[in-house]
Length: 168
Picture 1 (cartoon, rainbow, N blue to C red):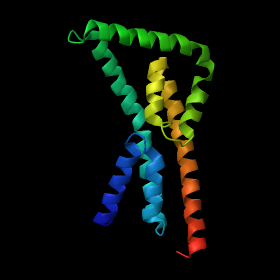
Picture 2 (cartoon, rainbow, N blue to C red):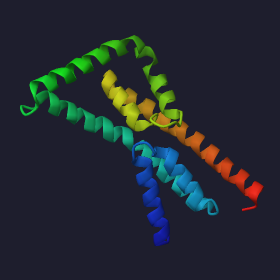
Picture 3 (cartoon, one colour):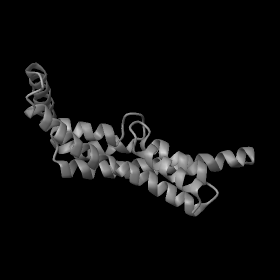
Picture 4 (cartoon, rainbow, N blue to C red):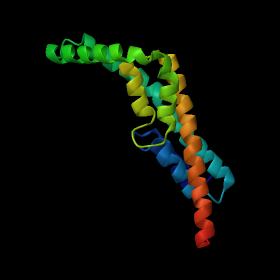
């Protein structure tokens, strides 16, 4: 594999892992760069999906330690700690009304490939609602797979249509 292709795959991974772009940025890059090489296209899409799937475990793990730091730190001002705990309690209490819908709702939220509806935001929502980490992870990962399928289909179909229209 050429150095150029490896660099592109790394960029696809980073774009797919980053907030906001996620697979909505990684898959179109893969299609744009590798549309004429089916093997590299498959690898690029796989790397994009993998990069996006890595977000939820990372963020849910990180938020757990941020929460512990805020709650247990002696350096954290008491009013900040108190406000933080009040907000979490309020959100979790309000979220209990929707517990039976939280897994499908979170999966659908992530699967809709719009700005701010990806794995980063869903991980924060799951944390704020106090969702079971395993259930949240399953819902988010299913949503990522759904979003990946939608983005790939739309992007690849768009490229084929543009090629036919403009003879590219």
